[in-house]
Length: 410
Image 1 (spheres, helix red, strand yellow):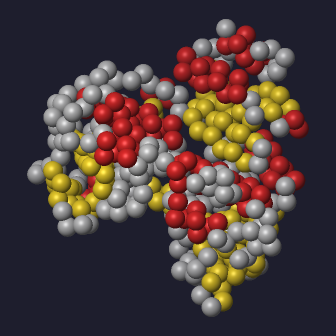
Image 2 (image 1 turned 45 degrees about the vertical axis):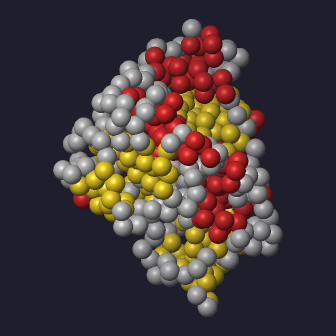
Image 3 (image 1 turned 90 degrees about the vertical axis):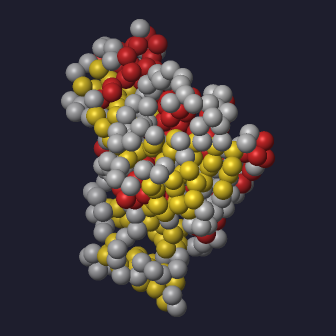
C-alpha cells in the first residue's frame, strides 16, 4: 500500500490493535490513524488478568500497553467505548455505535474473540463469570477469597490459571472438565497428568468426565453446578472457560471470506479485499511451516500479525515468519509451548516430571513439530529453533538431559 497519507482505521483496541497503531507510527506512517475500542480504557495486556491482576499484584497502569498520553502524542485518534456495527467495503466506511461514520483507506480488523457461554438452564444467574476483560477480572476478584467456593468449568489453560489464582487467594476450587483429562485438546497426556497432580497438591479438586447440565441458584445468584449425572457441585461463583469464538460478524456481514475467523494471507491481508487486514484472535491465517491455515489465540500471534499488517501498509518488507508459541503461569510453574503437534508419530520426554523441570518433544520422523517445556527455558528456546529450521535431531541426545540443547541442535 505504502501511501504515507492514507487513513488507517483499526477496529479493536486489544493487544493486536493497540500494537498495530503503535507500529504504524514507528514504521513512519504519517497519515491519520483511528483506533476504535469497545472498552473504556486504552489497550492493555490480557494474560495477567487470570494471574497477577486477580491476585492483586498488578493494576491498570502496569497492564497498559502504552501510557494513556501516548495516543494523543502520536496523533492516534483513540475512541474508547465505541463499537463498529457496519462495514461498507464499497464506500470504505465503518459505521460506529456513537452515530458517526469513519472513512478508511486501509482497515485493520482486530476485534478479537469472546468467551463461549454455556447454553444451559441458569446461565443468567449472577456469579457466573468469564475472563476476557479487566471488568471480568474485577468481577471475579470480588467473588474469590478465603472460605469462598469457586467452580471452574473447563480444564484448559485459562481454567487452570484461574484455579491456581483462586487457591492463592484462599478459595476452595473445583475444576469441572467434560473430557477424561484436563488440557485434552491442547496438550499431551503426560502434561495433563503432571498439571493435575501439581494442582491437587495445592488443594484443587478435579471432576473429570463431568458435563455441566445446569446452574442452580438462590435469589438470582448461582449456588451450584448441576452435572449431567445429577450431582450438584456447591459454589459461590463459577468461571466458565470452555473456549472462545472469533468476533468476525462485522467481516462476515461485509462479505469477507471467513472460516472461524477472517481468512488472511501472509501479510495479514484479507483474501477477499486488499484494503482490509485482520490480526490476532479474529484472523484465520496461514502457517507455512505446517502447510496449514488455522486460528491462533496468543499474544505472540497478535504481535506477529500486527507487524505483518503494519509492514504491508507502510511498504516495508514482510517480516520473517515466526514459530508460534504461547505460555501459561500456574503456581510456581512456567509452561512454554512452541509449535503445534500436527501429525506427530513420536513423543519424547526430556527430564523428570517429579522435579517440575522437564520438556515434552513431539516429533514427526526426526523433526521437532512441537515442544512443551515446564520451567525449562533452554528446551523451549532451542525447540523453537528446531521447529523453524526443520533440522533432523538425534533422538537419543534429545531425550538425555545431560546433553545440552545447544549440542542437540548443533
